[in-house]
Image 1 (cartoon, rainbow, N blue to C red):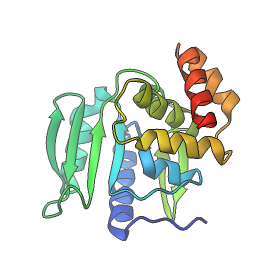
Image 2 (cartoon, rainbow, N blue to C red; image 1 turned 180 degrees about the vertical axis):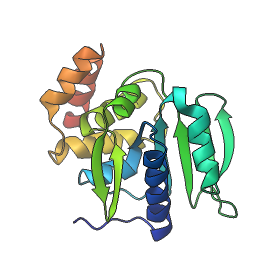
Image 3 (cartoon, one colour; image 1 turned 90 degrees about the vertical axis):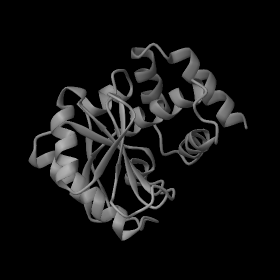
Length: 188
């Protein structure tokens, strides 16, 4: 089992969220740094990226409130922030996202059961996680270059099946852009 850099508070929150989603039979997938840790690349983070089925939004938000989290809309309808009362956002938070397009939508529909430390949860399959990060880079939404760094690491360390990524990118009509991005990442 791989050691992570996550605080016990983050892991406890992740476990509580996974139990709540499963107990209420809600479709979800954890993305971002927490999901990457399950596939062998642990990067420090203080937030959990929770992607959920938009049709289940009222139940999802109710389940999170039942855990004692405060819910604040970021982009009403699509993105909410769940905060632990008394804990600053930079220390521990949950981004709650209701995707309406791929690759995020597919990840919620087809998650993989993974573990980080002793916590079991549903996560983005690694190929979809790669494509979600690639899309953020391609759309210009990676101003801190965090996603670009993650993609480069996944490629250089051989953690990603490039053929599977390209196969999925083709289905999502992203093939040319993703192929070009991979080439740039591997050359830099």
